[in-house]
Length: 116
Image (cartoon, rainbow, N blue to C red; front, side, top):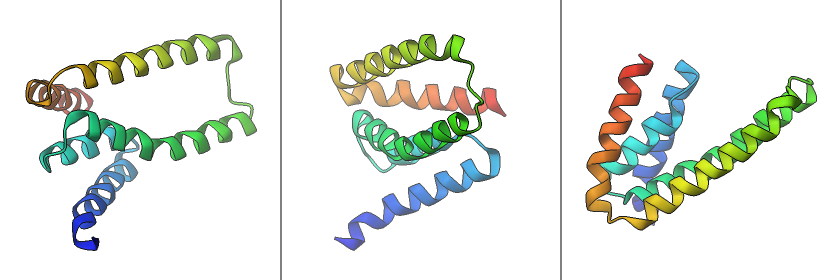
């Protein structure tokens, strides 16, 4: 079992290394690595988002603690983010992964190029 988990541990380490150096791109790099290991897009996306739940919660609590929240835009962002997340999850599970892999690969590549 441990031999099966090593590639995923290395993906997490590499993605976190990129994120630590740049302050962004954990999702892009980890999703790219997971897709290259052969995971279906929906599984890769779910794995990335589960991993980001903890860091996002800590970040949000930190902003709340230091009163660094503009309450006038909080709920519009919550609603839009929830709608986007639900829509994206629905789309990923609605189409065959053979069609989605090249589209997601191009999307991630475009994200890397435009952020550089």
